[in-house]
Length: 496
Image 1 (tube, one colour):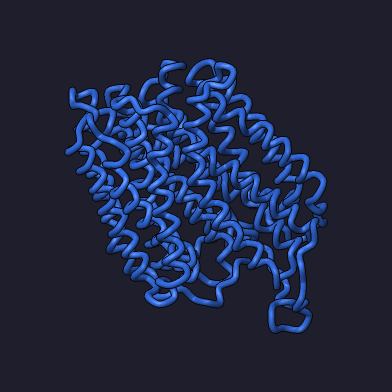
Image 2 (cartoon, one colour):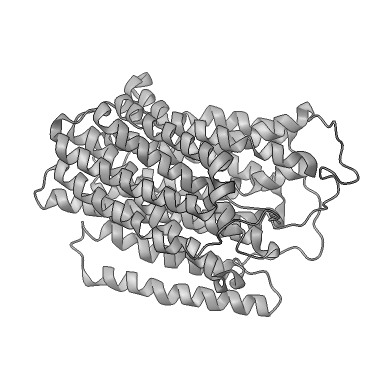
């Protein structure tokens, strides 16, 4: 699902079976170029989200990065994106989708170059956070741009291409990253996973400049930018994540716990500020009425547990097999292939066969399968010890992928169907922001558990297995939350 959804309404004329729908419409070359340009931007983001786990050990060796600094390299990107995603959509409403898309791609490319040139962990962390902010400006514009170019009768078909392409990118990301690090082109080692974005970004920027239609002036009812809401939500997220990552290295001083506790009243202040803003007729960052719906809030909490557990799996396993077992970067990337293939199978089965027939039960099946898969990975790591091979991990890692595919195929549509039509745009943005925040929390919390275990004298085998057991338990907690969601998603949901 795209990172955010346009909230403007559009005409329904031209849908199949309605007057004005061109029955034999064939997309023009310009329309396909726009679609490919938006896909290119989304692929850059997805690659940057998945590729760094493979390069993390090489970054640690070259920049002498600590465990918490490695966590920030990964979590800083997703946290910055989570903070700014909804604001990025608002900027498109205010200043134009084309303008913000071009700005986002340009900034993303520039900060990718800065990441590749980093000479110390602090500069890399800052560049990664700026990459995340750039992605938050770039990604929300894509869906609206496609809808503005394709007529309603063809927009669905155009959007259906996203799933397979994103799945392929997720499969190839770790493999490409591993190959780039191992190839050590021009002595760049890990730096190549960032500078590869530069030619891709420049190409996307040139294409976007040429093919994306210019923005139309908006009317007097255009939304306003909620700066106070953006600051409150960002500060609350940072107060929650920062202690989880830095607490271990600083010896868990009291102020770390104070910071985490302070996140609660700031989130409450954000909620009150959003309600007050809506009462005064100004556009809130998040529609407050969303959180009065039990199914939507249950779906958000479910996302926190599920995606945090998934983030833990990727981070901890990649660190273990490279740092402790000596896998090469390419070997580590290929080890993730069973997960990606399992995810493709799970998504395909759920979308085509299972979800229409069984509805919410498919989501529960995904949770159970994912939790069982992570537990099986933990057991495999423990039993195989230092002789662990890719073949040992293949069955359990594939099961994890199937579980993720089953859940992802029906999660977003099921949760979105629990809100009113006028709220679907904001709901889509919130869901994606929470998904990014959950990934950051998973890296922060479970990464800290892993490094704490190592500091206590445990082997990497023991630390990895115990951390993954906790990750499996986190995913299991999604089960009761799933019962809050609708049994079947509505079939008439439209994204506004």
